[in-house]
Image (cartoon, rainbow, N blue to C red; front, side):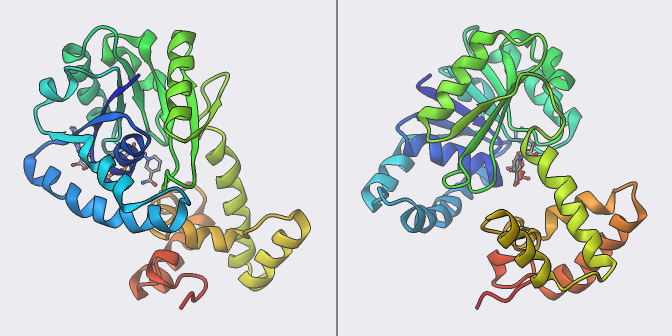
Length: 282
Ligand code: NAD
């Protein structure tokens, strides 16, 4: 799989496109309009210093070569015409995903394999819309794909194992560590572990059992883990936990969401990205 098309060039789509191009793939980045695609220049300028900081083999020349392998297109037929693999990173809304895949399914070459980067939807929610369910699965990245380089590969019951293998190989070729799930699991592996853990930590905080630094320290020392839960909140940033918990069925977690909004988001304490969150980093 040498030709990748990425559908959606937001936070994750831009990172996936850049990472694949950095590892030598030919990439087409598709989004709805040329105005949105014009913002990709800013995305590359944002990513370049992070690659130079985090990856020992990164050089300005390699990063410019990566950008030269990415072609932007707002014409879906044109974007898909040479694709071996399509990775979709459009908004996390079922109907948008199904519409996008139904259009892509009608336009892409018959050999093209389709992968969604959805965090919360299951491949079986979308597979029939593609017109080629056997070639459809999930390849789930984590934010900051160049260093949080996990690639969770998850088919639905009807996915051809050859497509699973091909996508896992592709993920490895672009620098991910692929992990194949044997069955569909909401939240994959990472969020199946992370969300209950973060919920438990949030309740220790809500019940004022100990200060956040003490909770984090306990976890680090007792498990050898590099980060405690509130350090992880600062890495993730407050926006996603706020959105998830504001919709929780658990009233305590809805209360926690309001604290995230009032004491953190509204005060610009968004996490490490802004220099402060539960901790000050300056
Ligand atoms: P985002 O809002 O930053 O980007 C979405 C992009 O899709 C935008 O550029 C938008 O213009 C485009 N778009 C909207 N409708 C479209 C359509 N019909 N066709 C093509 N493009 C369209 O979103 P994001 O954070 O990059 O998330 C995208 C996907 O990645 C979601 O499924 C999300 O669950 C998943 N994901 C996100 C993260 C994260 O940390 N942000 C991590 C893992 C997975």
